[in-house]
Length: 311
Image (cartoon, rainbow, N blue to C red; front, side):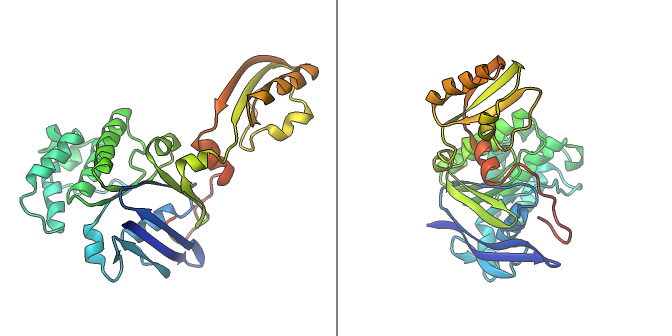
């Protein structure tokens, strides 16, 4: 069964097209990554999925329920953790989660609320007013709010932005458990190592368009071989090797990252360096990762959000 069906979605703000015919499906039980630079359209797409923004063209369905025409059923099946720290300053943590349960018509939900708080290390903050919590604790409450009605589809929009290592570990342990139990998870993050570790499939957005959509393993195969990182004690890189320098590489002194297809290409590179009079100080052969894929497909430059609406 398809958990999220996005069909030819377009959205414009004052003439700027934030989404340009985006289509993709997220299957039930997947851990799906949605990646892209600032201004790519990720937040606009998530807001459309959540029913906060109506698309100009196209449709979005959650478990077959249209987020516009059948929004009540669609929202019951969706839990969204937003980027922003939004909270009501007049309630304690437990009261906040009880109130959130009430929005979905759920009564006597304390057992699940207690379990969620336990798994997010919020139990000792249950009776603390939201205003008194640190930023990291508020972030945990946002996650708890998204999970309080046990949604089969969970969307995490930059859930670990600016939080400590402890929260990251706590969050991923709980979310991984929910995913193993059948919950569908969609993650947006700028921490690409998190996406590589967690996601089974990834979609990459750029300027409102899908520029890549594939399994993690298939994406990693797009960057052939490895990278040879060399730091030169003296001398310089010969012109014959310049085409191997990663397009995102900025020279740091005499440090270069060179693309290699396999280990057999390393010795000819070293021979070329020696012939050019270069002396190697340090050398390391690294495997390609999701960051290399991201920079290759999307590009290293961060796009500035356009005026007129969220990106």
